[in-house]
Image 1: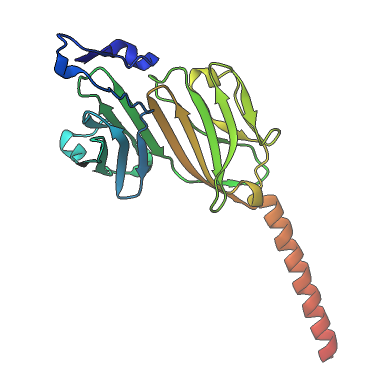
Image 2: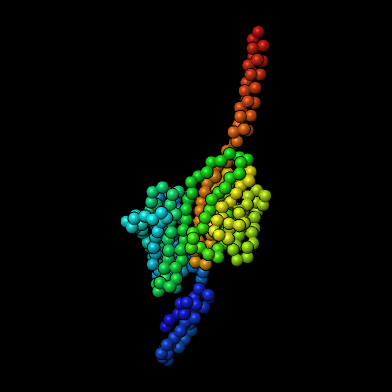
Length: 257
């Protein structure tokens, strides 16, 4: 038996049987699913996982900037279900400064014809004054082509999709129209950075996640943004507090006299 490997990415999962015998008669069942590699990151480790795989794939890790081979030693656990399909979970301890490193994990098919890749970066936290334009950077890996872009915002618990873009249709959905925009000229080139025009403390402080999704790859950048009171407003508040204090002192003096 064999598959038409070059046709699998296009939806052809046909099976070729050679030298048939009577014993080969019966019902053949084809199971297909969209393989998805999920990547999660904490301060201590990065984890990649995928479900419903057969045969078992090879898992590789890389970083940008590159890390020494010994720093990429990982723990990979493979388990199978009653159907014989595998779940693969691979964990790598983080290397150096988390915000300076992009992590890549790749699942390579047993025949080495297919590769699924996930990558992630947790960018430095941003502290920025309200009212002043702020750009939150998000750049796709050079190899990513024909992608869709999604920006989500989490102020506290529940994430909200605020922007979507697809390179094929060139269609943009923007829930924050007028408040935040990408650069439409740079988007097709893989620059999905988001510009907040007038960030507000209440509305725009939280976690921003930018996701590029391709045919067999996904890249995620997470950035925590803290919007603070502007120096002008802070100065006005301090002057008002000072006036109130002076009035209070004058009143107290008059009562004592």
